[in-house]
Image (tube, rainbow, N blue to C red; front, side, top):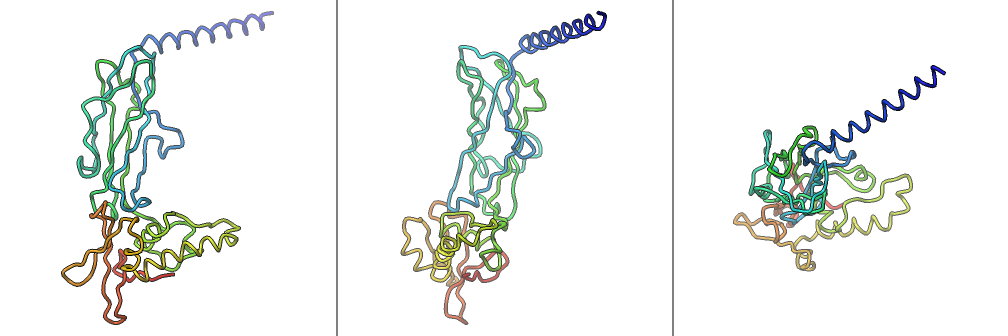
Length: 273
């Protein structure tokens, strides 16, 4: 009998604690926070690279923002500021933040539109970081201190993919970039049964080879791609997207072969597969 009474008291105490926790949650002021998925890198970090979209000059990240508390029938303002440790530069790597942003009436979630820029040619060599932090407004607090920070890593770098050695010769980031430009895809088959995809993969490799073998002919034959070759004073060419002239690949004349070759990040000729 005593055991039954002890269990009943324990259950009642737990129920009371839950009700108290609920009252505490809703008796506090409403707060705003970044609501990243647990699968996000380090939970509050986003890695973005322009490398998979050669020629793109800007893109928009939509960061998830939520409130803790009750929805109300009026718009509410929240604030995001750049915090310490940021190496990205407003106007060069991202669009300057607004003074405040809006969570619409009767809503508890919204997406913060963050515009990123691909204006810095050095992004192909090193990444920059943008650290964001929620700041309190008259409408919303920032009491959830563990959830009010976000870090965005911005780059234009290409790393060697796992499938490369199954289909390609010597890797370089420039060759990978030319592959993406020529094919519009970012990967080839690489599983245990990758061999059955040989016709498709060889087709894509052929498209890349056409660009590497005859850049001038490729540009003339693919005007919709938006790439151009600009003659330099030294007799070589710059190859780039007309939409993003800051991201250039050198096309250099070789007297030995009486032909032009793309030059990779290590100063070597890019050769077809």
